[in-house]
Image (tube, rainbow, N blue to C red; front, side, top):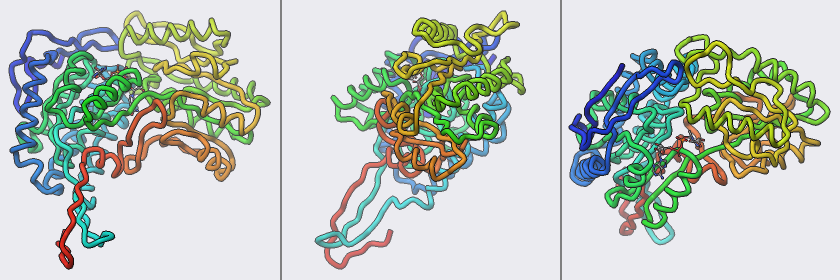
Length: 485
Ligand code: NAD
């Protein structure tokens, strides 16, 4: 049991304003694994005012990027020193299979921190050039106080994706993790404080939706960086629009994998499956729509079912588990309701559809494949966020591209073919922010990541991810004056 009775506000562990708490319960066995105070509006006020003080009067925004990068590097090292412990903590919070989690939930965040630490010495924060009428300096300055809001599915990963560039930029951050995953957020706070982050620069305020809204609307916040559902993203975008507050949104997905007619299934399916049922299907980038040529549909269906049959369902802490439990009982209800909807719509369950045998406790759902799916069905249009795949037939390449694009979302996607050029041709036609051609790497941390359409606004990762936390200032200079930068 990992419990906290205080909140990390302004760089110190302080008495919360109320006695409300969040219980963290293991999705594998429903046992209590931790408890933290639930932040209230009064705690948000304190956190924002500490961040304002740190940003408006503290040393942090005025240190050099290379100096700030040292904190990120030390924090990444500290996380690497306890990879297994942190991976188990996250698996206990939200059910991620620990073997996958060690890499994706813990090691990947250290790669992100290292990448942004590296930008501390290579990114051009200041440039001087000849403008149209004389010398010009463009300087990039921290945007100010940032509200970072994340969901529970890849908690440390998303914290790293927001905090690393925000801190490198010189911002102060109020970080609101999801109520399901406050423990790893507190561990990150401990690690960053130990790594030398000055007081006030970071607060961690575990809270639910309403307190989250209060934070978004807080006049002391300059920028909101949100990852979560498109429903919440619309609300947050509207609130920020009304206040002309900077905002970036990383939202949901319903990504399609296109298997072209020449595809080699023996090579492709093992490459594709970890991204189709990733993180128990609780991943925004999951390839949940599989598009197969009509004349190879039966063959693909059979091979896909065999892949899913081979996946080991189990306790999240078992290192051999490939599919763990869903985050919470309500998430299992949501996924099971979509399975019923799929059947009512006329799709057929080729494998799965129920609860796996042998688990009296925990929120498990069998990995499920629906066949005979039409792209107009709700199971093909809405984000289920569970281990449920829809196999959709197409007539020709143009039809496959049309179906892939016939979605409100545009986050990720993939194409598989024996011909890389043909694959790249398809990639250019699909309207999504990231895409894989015969690849199993959905995100490259040095390159932009984000969504078209309802999948978001803005791009995280790469230099774009840093720019989200910078304001640009143009300074015109007198003739002949070229300051060194
Ligand atoms: P959610 O939108 O319900 O909640 C996400 C976070 O936002 C939580 O911390 C929640 O408390 C908070 N929140 C919710 N409504 C809010 C509001 N109006 N104002 C302020 N804060 C609010 O999402 P969820 O169900 O917890 O997470 C799953 C969703 O996240 C999926 O749609 C998934 O695709 C998406 N996601 C996207 C990415 C990406 O990078 N694009 C990555 C991971 C998850």
